[in-house]
Image (tube, rainbow over all chains, first blue to last red; front, side):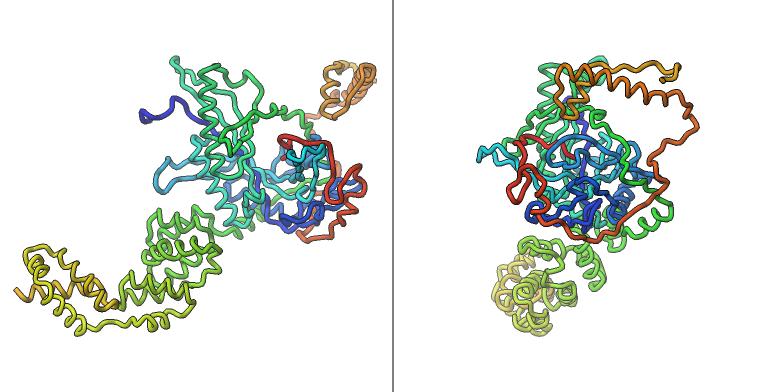
Length: 494
Length: 108
């Protein structure tokens, strides 16, 4: 702890809902397309009409299993669903089909670390992962001042994985980093697109403070659940605000955990504050009971093994693989993996063509990623393919031109879509042969006696002045070669 | 008749009030009184089961002896919006209309 550390520990647990990437809803064949006109993706089952019955979507269950395995969870051999009863207009049945006492998976973890060491690596425990259905959407136009809310049930019955962590996270920054890692993992595995704008990933956070007392006791402030956070950045800001707010409240009231019901607060992103909402109902108020319309599901070890085998490498493993396979730094591997599976594919194709990872990684980060970010779009649509980049790197390595000239060629290939060879020819780039180079250097030496004197006096860096002049006379010269030739000629003069 | 070993459970009016609130039922004083008595009788009747020794019995998750019923992830036709909204007390051709819902959803 440094002197600047606050006199408390922030204790954070997260509850994350992710929408599973299925074509259809959890219990019926309505599609889950985002953004369709209201109430166009509904049927008797997801409307909760009498006589309709739910049937479990196999793909949803398998994607949920995949998520749980990736989070190192234990898989229950026997699982069932329960009714969570509450009244709300976006829940047409009057209950949500969820999982209560026998979730299909539990007791896992996901680690997060920062390649720059901003915080210590943290293993965050997962209490449980369960499979449930989403509710619909209610819309209220407060400005119009009408008395009605409008209900769109397109989202009702969409499959969700609920992921509940242990209160293992110790700072807002860690919470954000952990969410980034979770999102990366779920996107890599094809479990969810985790698009927060479209509601495919939603986060609630539980937070309180542990405050050491003079008598050695740890005082704990009441736990607050924060909702309405629309980005990972909002999560970080809301948690930072809430920790400060609780610290202020503790100093004013000394209220401890258990002295009041759990409070829910909503994050107001524009105002940058949390505001109190209703008090959380006790969980018994949901009157859970086993869902009679769905039969239980059993999972065998063979099924688990088959899903595990089909999963592919999670990001944490892939970082290590890239590090050892291509001899790149942990930081470089992190940057590449965090850009997603497709970009890693591009990198590996490039590194294979070039025959080494370091140059490929540099070009990925300095040129490909930079241009990709400027242009927007997916790496799959990026016009300069790995073969072209490898071609440029190869020509640099054999001394046709230097890296900065290579960059210009890259930019031109990106701009015109022409093959590298055509661009090289069109730019008049041709390797400068040794006799041509020697003549040019000799000319510069005789024209710059001051620089020659400096070099002879021991200031070798003075030769840099000649490199610039050489590039002006012939843009195709290789600066390294000019430097070597100039020094060699000056040495032979003395 | 309740087994003699199980004590007569009795619900208080406060219990019934809470259940009514959760069920969004508004009860008059007389209704509350009657229901407290009637629900107490029902709970008392069911609590006869408490006399049975169930230590060696597995909890029953479902009365049917069936498991692993799935459907494939294949789209099926949805209802036309007009059909979906047809039985709603109030609607605007696109959405169901309900009295103003303000604040946070209780969902998920």
